[in-house]
Amino acid sequence: MHSFCLRILALVSSFTGLAHCVTVTIPNPIINVTAGNSVTLSCAYTLATSNTHNLLIQWNFFEAHSQLLVPVYFYQNGQSYPTGRFKNRVTGYNSTGNASITISNMQPQDTGFYICEVSNLPDLLGTGHMQVIVQAPPSTPHCSIDGNMAVGHSVTLVCFSKLGMPQPVYTWNKVVNGVLMPVNAEQSAGVLVIGNMTKFEDGYYRCTSSNNLGNATCELDLHTGAKKKNVNKSPPNQLVKECKSKFNFP
Image (tube, rainbow, N blue to C red; front, top):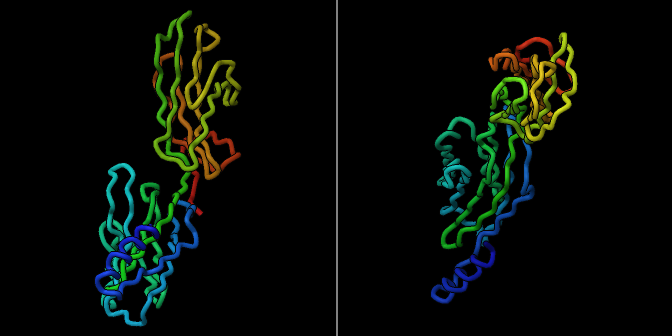
């Protein structure tokens, strides 16, 4: 971006001799925040003049799934304008040299790249960007059974949480008299393969989806394929025997 600005600067200067680039500095290019908390996106700028009548500050969010730039906030003529889904969540600092903003109640869908743009005509636009990662405990996983639940056949149990950052780790256990027992079968990335069903494999199976912020579980009855329990959240390292949410965001 700096080299691009220099090329434009050279072109404009050849006509006017007056153009400069606004210098934008991002001190923290990668930021981690827990879902529900606020985050400050720091952006500093340096102008070539003390005249700020044409100062314009704008923030955009690059939305990964749509590949679109979503407006977040802009500042012009002494007025702040939070926009879109961020409208009631953004506060700007707007002091000299400071284009930082704070966004409240961050959610997993707010993960992505945020772009700070500052211009002050005739000075040319300066930009900087940062990556924001919103961390959250796993959502209640979805459990399913694939295969013929009959003796001698292969059965696959699948477990997946739609939400969770860092990426959840999945563990399958068999529930025997309320106690979690290890499973002597191949499992990877939430998939448990029972290659040769016998009556000893009958029973309830629990999948635990976990990361450093919490865990959630679901259970399957291998007798019938029906779901038994699928809501169960807790802080890490705590075995829960009731099916209810026990996680609170810090």
